[in-house]
Image 1 (cartoon, rainbow, N blue to C red):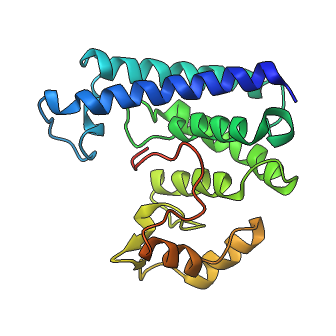
Image 2: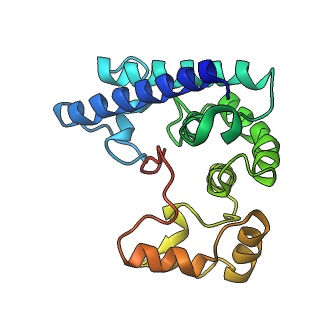
Length: 208
């Protein structure tokens, strides 16, 4: 266990949560911009916005820069190195790199996120990362490049409580089985019951 690395990533994830929490608490104080990005995340599209907005942007970009440095020296930091909570925290930072908000999900950050997929795949195969972490990153990349999701783990894969009719449930389940995720029918049952499917720490509402 690398306690120093674990402490660092947990502190960074905590700073992220604090910044986002303050931003959400203050959002209704500001005017709603015209945007395709859902409110209140549309506020994050402005680089010179109010302080809570600038704080979120600064924290997320600093975290992504730090993550680049960590991964330049080692494989994906898994459970045995940073614990379950540390693994979740690393995933949260990578997840935000691919945000649907263009000031965060920049082309450079999206490319970096894509480059991390092989590292996550290896970590999942080794039992060092949660399969849903990989599925979220892959499906986010699909969403950002207008492709059909491979694992259907994002809310955008569902419509009226069912998998969207244009998605191939058998293909999705085959992809899920390959990495150790339960069939999409299990996710659907959990969604209908009002429970998040295999919830992982740090999950944000889309477009995060």
